[in-house]
Length: 505
Ligand code: NAP
Ligand code: MG
Image 1: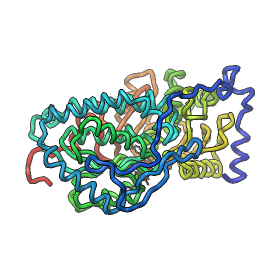
Image 2: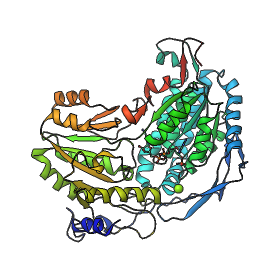
Image 3: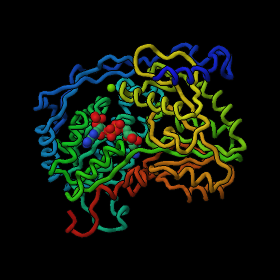
Image 4: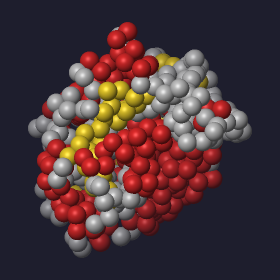
């Protein structure tokens, strides 16, 4: 961070001793550490064809805990021969899996869902250690949703005719699934559960910094007697992902990640006949009208941007306030920010954990510097940050213009940009002034206004008087540069089915 940016940020940071609505500052509370110790093997191999195999590439990489930078394990890096082997295993398994009775496919998914519930505390702790998210989020938000996704799709397996309007359907085939690091296990569930329910087989590649929970999910598939090769998990970095999605034995690519990588994958798949779904980036508008229930709206805004350190594709990262309430709302939001506890992700009281990697922290800092340089006012909530690991305090930019970098680019960190509006029409046109279209939120006590805004907002998901709420029955996905295709709900299933004519690839 440049010296100028650092000074500007410090100037607006309140004295931790006097700030906040309570006498006790959040960072003064006694620690409440998670007591479960999760054993982590020093080495993790690839999961291919139902077995754990050493990488033919002979390459390995370390995965670390971003909260203290300690190495947790070394993980296999799949090379070309490994990718080929995994796709081959998935293709071989497809022959019998696609013919397995739908009820049996559903039973496997039910078993997996129940085993996830049984092992959920262990999985939550591991997710937090490998990725940096607060234990209360991995335990109370992610893991219940992971299990819910498997339960939901288990129920669909023998009812696919209801998703296709009565038409016959077939699985698409071998699915290459590439996921990001912000919700590692949840994204794995979003990808694997519908694919298997529809009779496909999969090769999944988790992100390099967060491979460990996907590999434990592989263990669960083994425990539940999943036929070999139906689920394959191969680890590695971007190059492994590239080789996987470009493999000619793949019938469908399901990608969740950045818009820039998504464009590269779409270009590589063009003309190959591969099915493609893309869940990409976002710059979600969060609109608060003067008639909104302000206390609830403040909580919604906090959840919208400071949940999961702001590493959320659908984060409400642009806050649009109706001009008449802007000053009061910002003052109260600043007070509320002082109550956000930043620190040890394994502490049950922590609200904001570690930034996932040094690279992501550097990106967030670069954006904050740009915000200050371009003239926005930066407010950072107080409290000491841990000395080791990767940390970024909750940050608020006010006086933001629509042309500012912090109003346009996806920061993917705990940074909120505030803009204002005078009329609903202005709110909608400013909110839609972005290349993205993943999520939006509206706060108002007038139902007619809420529905009219939802109609005008160009986003795949619009939350009314809430934010960042998820349900497997509700389709999720974007428009414009946020991608195409849906995950969840009936629409999510159709991405994994060929409906009707046999001529389709
Ligand atoms: P990313 O760099 O695009 O990476 C996503 C995944 O793709 C990772 O597994 C990555 O591997 C892999 N990858 C990288 N280059 C690749 C290539 N050329 N071909 C195939 N795979 C490749 O994104 P990220 O930084 O991990 O994740 C953050 C982004 O994901 C944000 O933009 C966010 O908005 C988006 N996201 C979207 C959704 C959604 O549902 N719309 C959900 C979550 C996140 P390595 O990481 O191992 O290099
Ligand atoms: Mg890690």
